[in-house]
Length: 293
Image 1 (tube, rainbow, N blue to C red):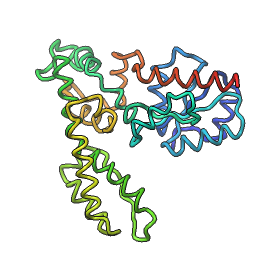
Image 2: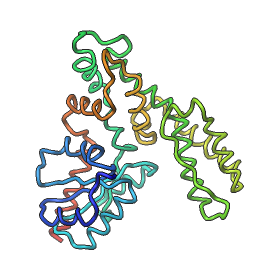
Image 3: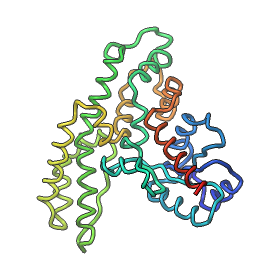
């Protein structure tokens, strides 16, 4: 059973609300909605966050709630996913008239990967009683390198998913086309050769060589940036990296589940990431112009 509100339920909530409403991704409040509320809770009634499962549902919800004429301005906040730098930059232009905004990084989880925050989790939570963090995780540079290595391991997954998206855009109209799911974990590479799997899939609609070419080009693009963490955070899913961090981070006792571990991270990093704070200010400014117009 989904944990997010129906549009009718959302409309009732917003008709008694104030400020602005932001529809975000996440199947229920324990996902994106939870993190946004933790980071921006000090804004009180100025901003409320409401989850809808997936970017298409977010866009549909924003469009429909605006059509219904809710008394508060409604905007969408979406993962960046495959959006280009140029499209993200357009959001800051005064002429931008869209009602859904994309994160500057690939996804929300990309903002849960600050090395200092994770060193704090290791010292104050996972190894607090022992008073000593295992070697290789005991300094900011060491944790930084761990996170960077997870990004590098995820590059074939990112290239696979990019290729899947691009071929779907260019070949979906063909009668023989069948969609392919994205790969969602680095561990999939233990049993799947990403390039070969794409070629086999694309051979059904005559795009085997195109699949290999697009995959290789994207992988080369990513590998050229593998030492630039800022660039990787724009083009590689933080979900993949966070999964690997959760799987491998040393624990003196029972390993927390992913959500519990993420909450422990937030205990160390209460301030919202600067990029997200800037994006929210941009949306608030847009809402003021919309009200005054």
